[in-house]
Image (cartoon, rainbow, N blue to C red):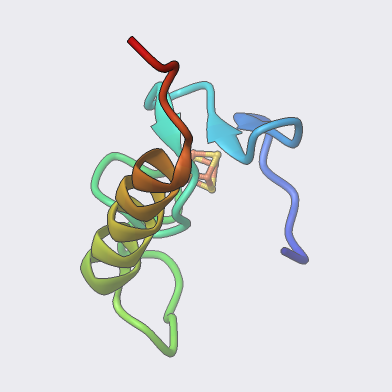
Length: 64
Ligand code: SF4
């Protein structure tokens, strides 16, 4: 990402303000309503959540 936000934690691309994934323009974000994005924030939030869900499914579980 090419922006600077004082709430952005680069280690995990996490928002310290919202205590969740950084998705610029999402509800509660300091950029909400102040910037125009090619892909709407709600679409990017859904994509991010789906990406995390897929990652969780790929994590091998310990054998019983
Ligand atoms: S979601 Fe918004 S407020 Fe939070 S880190 Fe990202 S750009 Fe900053």
